[in-house]
Amino acid sequence: MAHFIIDQEMINSESLPSFSLTIDDSYATTIYSDTDMQAELVKVLRENAGIPIFDQQEGLYNRLTVENNITFFHKWFGCRTPIPEILVLFDLHSCAKKPLYKCSESEIRRVYFAKYFMSGVSPMVFREPIHGVDIRTINTFINMLQKIKEDSIPVLVLVSNMEHALLLGDAAYKLHDNGLHPVEVDEEENASEPDSPDAPATTNLFKIPAKVDDKMILFDPPEIDYIESQDGKAMIVINDESYAMDSTLSEIEKKLEIYGFYRCHRSYIVNLQKVREIITWSKNTYSLRIDNKIQSTIPLSRTKIQDIQEKFSLK
Image 1 (cartoon, rainbow, N blue to C red):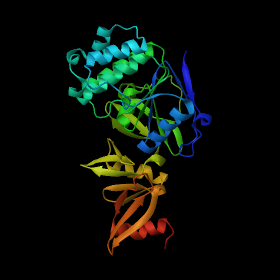
Image 2: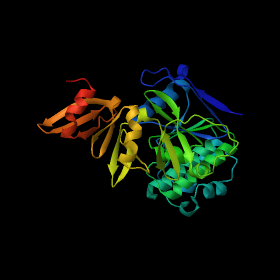
Image 3: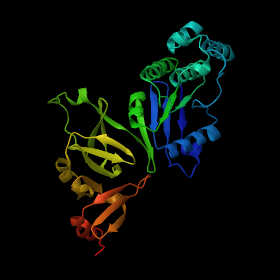
Image 4: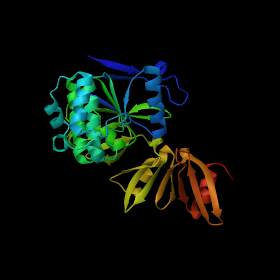
């Protein structure tokens, strides 16, 4: 079994939290983070570990056709997979005779995928591989991941979109200031199965569920910035990303009080641990500034100002 390890000795960066992750060849691993943290991790992997990062930046030959690009890199890397098979695998047969500069962004991305696949390097680390491309190209990348795993090559995918992390990763992690943590998911089909009467009793841990595509992702209350009502449904907000809940604010409010959440407005429940500042815009207009990457501000009802001041012992 092939694998590679990212640990604190390799990281050696004040901008990244301490963590250790072993990536083996039996599944695709994704790390979700904001773009700043992702950029620092890319820098560390390149400079400290000498690992190439596939980020669609290095050269293709724009004036050559798609097929000629594939032929050149096929020979350069000594790839044993026949060129016609490569063209079919990466859905490039229909544009094989087209010069690269006339190709769409998605077609160019698939040429990059073919180049990376033919390189045969191990491990393979991809950065934002499916950002801004069409469904056809996304499916091509997913098929390539399967081929990479069949070739026993460890693969890591870095993304700044939670949906991409769940779509591409057999194992998904979230990297933030507090470290690296697995993204906990609860597949709907498994959740619908009744518990066996013989199953051992377990302690109920409170997680807040939200839907991402066909999966249910489970959030720890402390990582949530606030919850907002949109069209009658509650949306979990973490930095600038939102996740839909199958609940209303009223339904979730009582459950969250014990974790330090407060109904600061008819449309908002805020995590008081994340409040950095109470802003007074006018005599009767207030906001709360959240301590997150984007310094979010959410409204505070004028009827709540005295209550929240008391909670923070400001009066």
